[in-house]
Image (cartoon, rainbow, N blue to C red; front, top):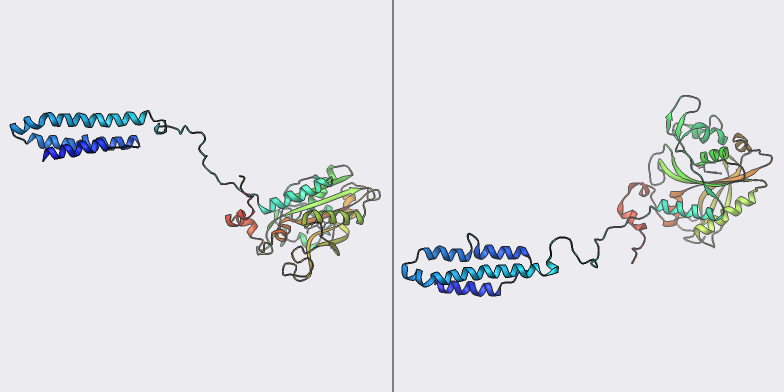
Length: 346
Ligand code: DAH
């Protein structure tokens, strides 16, 4: 009986293989631990009579030594194997841990495109505060005292009640005014920024959105210059075969004023559900800066003239990527944002 057990253990020790130090330790416990197989044979040995004790004592001691030697040999073997070394991996050619790259927000992508296009035309970028005063958002832009845009329904007031209340700007046209106050003519700027309106949030309206304002002032600037600037912009932004059309409109700060449509680049003028069958998509408002606006900021309206334009970035992005709900831009749903992720670099 015990002879068979000894042989079985000897065979197992011979065949024993360990890949890690942990496995070596497990093997040691299995054979030599307090409840190990070799230890169990010693327990059994204690119950033997004299004769059997004499017969198996030496054999058992040899078995124990062999088990100890085998475990020690396996431990040494692993220690001299560099791939089993503990501590940091020493193979520097192994690939690193992958981490997910973020993506640019569609509104940021469009803003950058617009800025790049107008930079090429020689425009500088100007910025102004989001918390503005009534003067820069309305008064200096020729809004009549009782104009509905000043109404509580549209404007978030920060401090109401006195002569020039603080408010969240409702358009980036306020940056026109600040630029005219600061810079000498000629002026060529575009002003990207966030604007705020007290609107119920829906697929087509939001209380926060982004605009880009443009302003060009010099001697002899004409409506033809405005038209050309917008046409060149539209072709850079929407494709070389883009057409524009201007419709007469009204803004207090421009005279004459127009709204600009671009030819629908989805149906190419045939009419589709994006352009609602008209073949045209509205992209911006513009006009010749009203002489009152120039004078309010200290620019001689007899010597200088200029044009201005303003557009909503979310709207341009919607047209570009056919997004049908404005709320997607603000909800940070990863599934939406990942649509705009650049292809991973290889
Ligand atoms: N500020 C206007 C708006 O928020 C957009 C605009 C229209 C800006 C005409 C302009 C302009 O500079 O000339 O709706």
